[in-house]
Length: 211
Image 1 (spheres, rainbow, N blue to C red):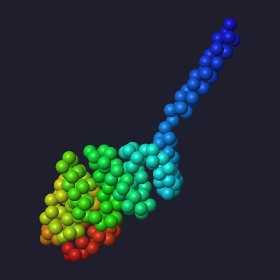
Image 2 (cartoon, rainbow, N blue to C red):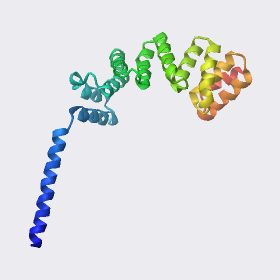
Image 3 (cartoon, helix red, strand yellow):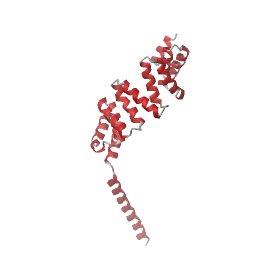
Image 4 (cartoon, rainbow, N blue to C red):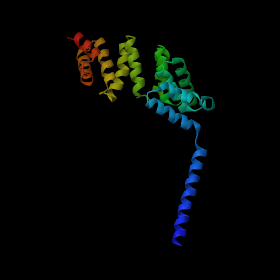
């Protein structure tokens, strides 16, 4: 009797294992496998293979947000900025409330020096997330590069209030204060930069000008 019970338990376990395996095999989604494989290739440093893995299944998954988002990023780091822009735009269209896809779109646009459209994207983001770090920092840095120092100060001070320990914020706002003639503030922030990034060339240049 005990042998019969033990045998029944073993047979039940085998049957359940076969059934579970069949269910897993049947339900496996090709896009899941391809996406996971793409990540594996990237982890091993082969972004071209990571891109190709998803491109193979793209025709059947054109409306998938995650696939468009990842292809946009992979195309960008592979320096195919036209493809990157196209995939990111698809991601924005699929999920137009997504901030991450809008921020992603700024990567290929920046590579193309399309700063006017980038400014529109950042301002659109700020309408729904007024404290967004990347949008405020980006608008501040663009204004700084365009020598619109008061505009730069407006955005950079806002982001500095929330992120006073960030390298990019201290550097950009430090230079903004320098050009606005606020030497004390400029010196303070550029000194912060040196604390965060030893021998930073830009900070050292600014501090030498303040001597």
